[in-house]
Length: 328
Image 1 (cartoon, rainbow, N blue to C red):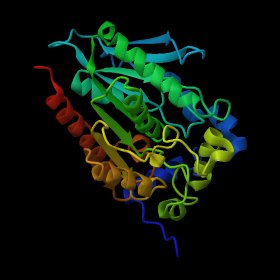
Image 2 (spheres, rainbow, N blue to C red):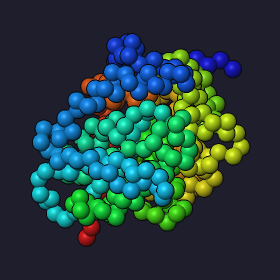
Image 3 (cartoon, helix red, strand yellow):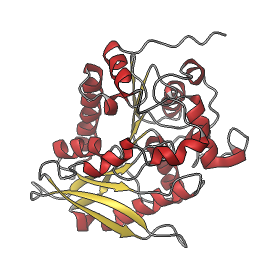
């Protein structure tokens, strides 16, 4: 079988050319430390998280999993008084292949939604692999959700209207979090926004082969990330669903999901399969496959026409979700 890749959207292909010197699709284990210190991560310190004064921003240390260190939550609350009642809460989980990043990665997207929807954003810091393999990341993310649900009122937030949201590894962790919270009978989010989520440790779909060496995250990088998280278990028979949600046997009883992915990226086939399995389990999912989109294209090239369409679809879904869930 040949693995001819689908073409990139022409506008996005131009953006890829501009960033290729800073971000390569392959990531080897011995490059993780260097990438963590790279310019892309350093630039996050310069973000205006207040969005021009719209949000009050604080970093708060809260209890981590039992017997483990505290975790850091980035909390962004609208500065203006709430128009009517407690606000919805966007619980954000950052990307970075399970090995890179902090709670500022990708949060500008969640803040843009929150600005439009009058919502609170809570972005969780979790321990990274390989220093902290599974289950450290998902347990940190769950501990942060427990704190957020228990203390939502302090943040002018509504504990009954929490939406999980994340991209790439963050999307995979949100999918795992929805499964874990369902099974532990923990907080029940009203929705999950899974943007190009990292779901399947097996790394063997046709799209993983088609996109080898292309884009910003290929199957070499994917193997690096999953092996860091799972070690020798990666790809084997005993990988838990809370590590790799594609392994879940039961996708029933989950909150409505929004999933999107590019047609020209490694994760395409596993995301399409996950959405299909939610429907097959009787669940609710909206799936977008953006033609010619590479991994995370709307973050790397936000002004591109395809990125604008993707962000509009995300916001539209959130508006409909929150309209249905509005108290009273």
